[in-house]
Length: 87
Image (cartoon, rainbow, N blue to C red; front, top):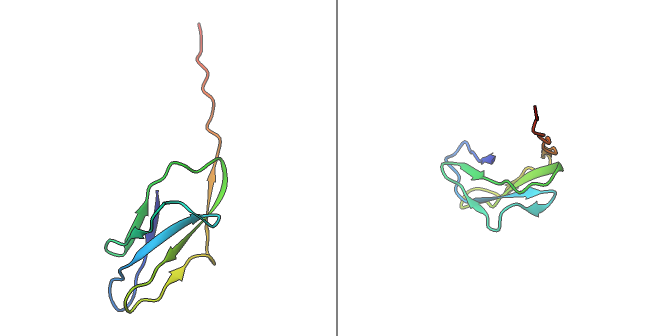
């Protein structure tokens, strides 16, 4: 799961966020904020490094914003292979 928190000194922002993996959207639609928080549940990341960024759409009285200057790097490793032990 990935979480994005959007806050302001002047109130609780509304709007949507889009999560990106190396510039490609991770969900088909933007995710609406709920109390300033957006959550994306995904299990589709392939093995390797992923640069996760978030874009906030903006709303009345709130400017759009993004996290491209501070990407989150998610590393997905190959799962271990479990071999049964025979007696």
